[in-house]
Length: 217
Image 1: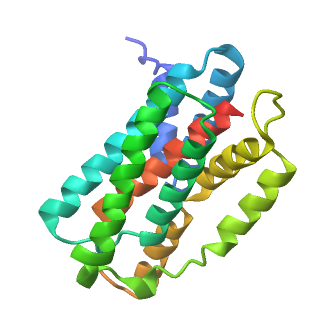
Image 2 (image 1 turned 180 degrees about the vertical axis):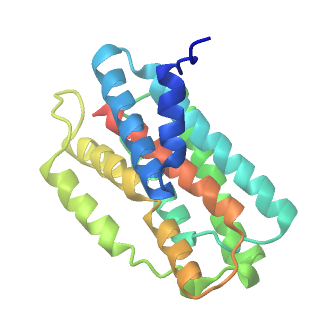
């Protein structure tokens, strides 16, 4: 009997398994980017993508509150990322460039994020690792503000300040996860144990924000 030929999918799967973790991450990022490009050019009504993004974000923050309440620790969680989240959601709400379900989801996200900030600052302050959460916020806020002034939606039915604030919130949303990544990097460098389940959830939310912001533009 002849030798059974492997299917192309099996060959590809075996090849991927042999690659290093860094290569697997790069391949995954490339596939995700190609998928986003395909979605951007094949689907014209993107409302459900935005709603899905905001719903996922709001749900993630609510789950985060539950974990903070039950675990009684915020170790490994970046307060600065939470503050950036509150800032870009507030900026988006002020502009009111979208209505209906968008406002409802943004309000839920903002209230939940403010509650997380309250938990970290007061209720769980003893478990917050402030010295590791040292990413300067002005490195993110100032460039986003300048970019929003220079590049913002060109519409005739919204005030200029609203368009600038909307752009500012969108730009800030895409990079709001950076303080969380910096905290995790610092924790690894200093060999400090952290509660990384919450941090992982934040990174997932950040990835979601980046992806859907890209689709929007």
